[in-house]
Image (cartoon, rainbow, N blue to C red; front, side):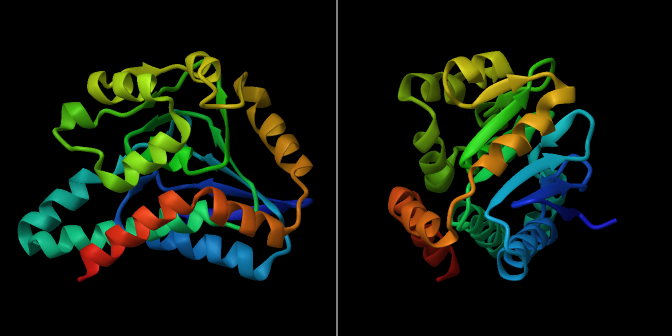
Length: 231
């Protein structure tokens, strides 16, 4: 089975992440980006919804079990190469010429939380699953790219708490702080996410222009980090 696939429902592309816990490796981020390229280039949809095939996890972020041994064996260049590819994925998602909706049907941890926050809108199952930034417990700073993405969506007082304490945010807490549009029963999550996406029936051209204007500070940070790591 492919790591990612999609189906078309009206004007919406529904992307399913099939890669287990949907952790990021160089192959997985490249395949995800290629899928987004295909959706933009070979379909006429003007909205996108992302969901996980895993029953408990939406995305658990970077696959450290893959990355750390690779860096230990190949050196810092391997880390930089992976970060460049991962940042390209996030840039691609942020700049898609259509509204994007994360249907968070399980835990979204670390890089998975940033993936969710890189969507324009988020819905979340209400009965289980956390949005969490656990990097403080892993000894890993967020870095400029993920900090820029988080600041776009999370008010400073909450960002400090999430970042410094690794607080696990429930769907109800996320809704209260406007991190998500709505906490839904699991059986209604996709129905509500797709229905919302279908109403976002806007032209690609205007959406592209608006996104590039609105997200220019984040995209600039990503481009600068990519250039730095590629030098």
